[in-house]
Image (cartoon, rainbow, N blue to C red; front, side, top):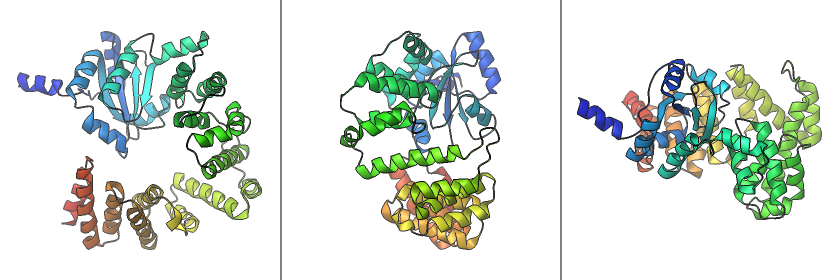
Length: 382
C-alpha cells in the first residue's frame, strides 16, 4: 500500500480535498503557498489540463513538494464565494495563495508542461510573482514587455490597475507594430469612450487592422463598447435597476431601430435567465435568433445547450435542436454533437439521441476529450 501511494504521488499533482479554511491553516503552519485550480465543470481547457498536464510526473514533482494543492469547482459549494473573493471570471484560473488568504500570483488558461512549471517558480520567487511585479510597477519600472505581462496578469483580478498599465504600455510602445495580444490587451482596457485605451483604439485603427482584425470586426468592437456604455448610463449605480424605456430609446439612437430592438431583447432575455424566468428567456431568445443560420457554430451550440439545461417547452426544444443541427453542420465536434444527443433525449427521440451520443463519443475520444458524461447518457438511452 505504501508503494502504491508513493507511485500515485509521483504520477502527478496530489490535490487535497478539505475545507479551504483548513488548507489556509495548513499553509500558514507549513509556510507554504496554496495552489488552487479554480475550474468549472463545463470548461473544456480545464478538462484538458486535468487530462494532459496535472498527471505529469515532472509537474507533480514540483507542485507536490512546494505547494498545498487543491482544486475547487467555482460554481459549487464554497467555490461560489471563493470565486467572488478572488475575482475568478475566466477558467481555468490558477491562484497561488499564502496562509493569510492573499493571492501572491495568478495565471489562467491551458498551458503546456514547462510553462505550467514556470508559473510555480514565478509564484515562489519574490522578484517575479504578482505582488513583486506590482511593487516594481509602483517603483516606476516601465519596460514595455514588463508592462504587457503585468497588464495580462491583472486584467481580471484588478481591472482598474490593468487599464492603467495598458495605457502606459501603449505610451511606451509608441509607434511599434501591434500583435494580436496587443489588440486584446488594448480592448480589455477600454471601459468606456472616455478611457485612455479607447483614444488609442480610435487613433491606431490602421495599426490594429494590420495586426489581423478586419475592418468589420473593428467596427463591431467599437459598437460593442458604445453599447455597453449605454447600458451603464441607464443603470442605477446604487440599486442596479435599469431604466428600460430610456435604454430602448438610447439603443435605437445608437444602433438604429432594428439592431436597437435586438439589443434590448437580448438584455431582457439575459435578465429573464438570471431571474429564472426560463419561459420568457426562451421566447425572447427565439425571437432574437430567427436568422440563426448566420450565427457561428459555437454561438449556436451555446444557445442550444442553455435550452437543454433550462427550457422545458417541447416546441422551444425543437428550435434548439435546429440550432444544434446547424452548429454540427458548420463545425462538427464533440461538444455540439453531445448537445444534439442530449436535446434529442429530452424530447423523447431515443433513436436520434443514440446516434448522436455514439458519434459524440467517437469524436471526443479522437480529440482526447473526457467523454464520461456522454457515455453515461448513452447508458440511459439503452
